[in-house]
Image (tube, rainbow over all chains, first blue to last red; front, side, top):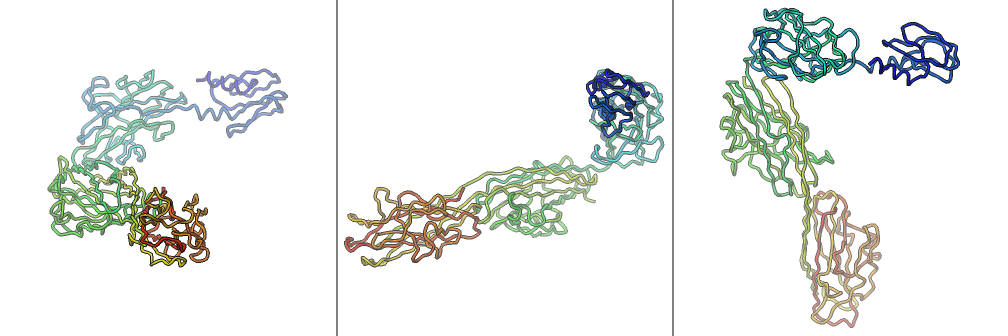
Length: 429
Length: 211
């Protein structure tokens, strides 16, 4: 890398000042520049053949009156910011605390998150850091950090402490000795391995040099304290004593603690396209929503439209809209009739379809006794209104089919209309 | 004389769109998911002719008579519609005939390249037979064309003879939220040598969505 720097400098100027951190004076017209480290170019000369020029935002020191040859002193500063290390968190692997640095078994495959992880159980987390940039400086002090926020790449992280009181802590284990060197265990991503360290009494390593084309592995022993919330999820990362300059993250180790109530929702498609609509001939579409929850009291699904005026508008003119049916207003319980109505005339309406929808998710009083002549439709409300209320757990997941029906008057402007809706599922208290 | 008219309706059709997923992470016991609805409303057009039969009053040669035909067009096309006309009998050069005789017509209608460019209509010459025009009176504004049919319905009114080629006689180039009206004024006078009798003929009206 140093040779590369010197080659560039030679291209910039056929004559220059010898770089050895000292000032240099000369009247020669033939100079070469050699550098072993990046420092500013200084010097003075009375030659009429070379000139010291400020560049890269840096002021050149020294005197020169030449109009023929120039040395851009600040280029060294600019290059200083270009050729930097890039410590890339590129792999990780969770490990059982049942052996030494080499014999402990793996709790999961490489780059796979842990789930249902038991609190107050020592585990080990190994990181692979590869320097995908240049060699610079004394090396980072790798600090273990965590967050309970998501997504991992934008969350704010805190150092994993060495004492209790937080969700996680670095914990001492008899299976390893803090500060011992690590050996290569995870998939190599650079040509050369350099030993890292294993930690169980501190959350931060000493300065660890990982040169260009090298990678290292750093392992920590830690556990989730019993006060951590059941079912909580966490992301982990390494930093340079809290700083992330020159760091890049390809992966974030993740773990979800055991216990708590789970809730997931999936919708079969985010794009609900009606068939082409000829005014006067209604068209229909549908969505399949699957909710899975261990919550004993079940869940409720609400829906709302995103636009304040109406659900769907012409793509080329937002003032031209399709009317909604009367907005759905959910009653207090699923046994009380809602304000749905049989579909007639024109407009956009929706309902929960009885066929295929899980029995526990369907309310006849809201959506009709069948999917034919008694089917009841309503318009999308502006604020979330309950459309499904299930009072039992849903594991494995249960299905809800949302039906959409649409017709427009003969004078509805032709063209493409779009509109957004949002489904929200909440575990019942 | 009876002028029989047939009507025809021509419409159009179109396509569809796509969407986006919005994931809304909430508290651990709540989840959100967004979806985008999309639809393409196709072009439609309806043509109604209020009376399929246009009957002239009895005609005394030298005293012109007029008859009117009113049609309405409803379309959702953002670019409006074109209203066309043609004589059904392509073999003959006139519309009104008996089994033996026919009533002459002035120069057949050929529209201009657009409604701002004049066509072949001209001031009516007495006794020149059957002619037609689209009057200002009764015709929806966007379908009027003073270039084609004259700046008024009196002294500057222009007439043309029928044509067997389907030809535009009116064009409304903008979206109309309600039905548009197109009136056709038939004007008829014959020379004193025109054979007496009942003359009939059929024409066709067409309405199409503009591209």
